[in-house]
Image (cartoon, rainbow, N blue to C red):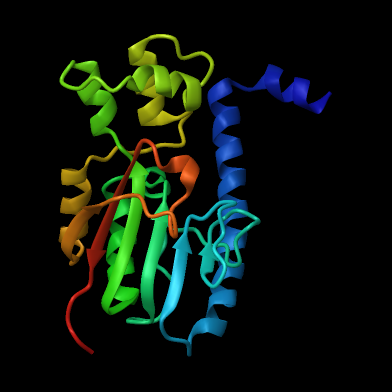
Length: 224
């Protein structure tokens, strides 16, 4: 009854905005709790952070996400509540594309550089956008569109352009698309050096994301 009244008395845009506000309030509460939890790690060194983990948690790591699977819930659009030079490795797989670029994505990379110890590494996996675009213009032929339609794309995606739009947006969850050059530039601007494109690592990466993922390592050089 209330839902019917709200739908009748409001517009779609207003209802979407109200849902967004409610979602942000929930995120704020989780983030505040996460900051309190992170304080217990303030005296620890060589932390291993699994950022934006979702259900793909790693044993022996600090799994960080808004997901209930994570040990620490944080809004990763905000500064990281970890000490300078306190982490040996930061890993994220299919997370960075969910941050607004350049504002939140570059803040996250700058914060990652800050909390990494000298010699530490950030390892990032994002959807490979070069593949679908190259195949669309005919410079590569690796059956991307049939694979995407079978594995990733929503059921409503029928044409190649619909599949490309889904790759970029994924029902509004994806906010930016990366190729190696763009990701390397963003990492370098945050201070990282030795940026390299790496192969899939079965000891680190998710097997179901092996196909179609761009994996990159970058390093915080220097000494303490």
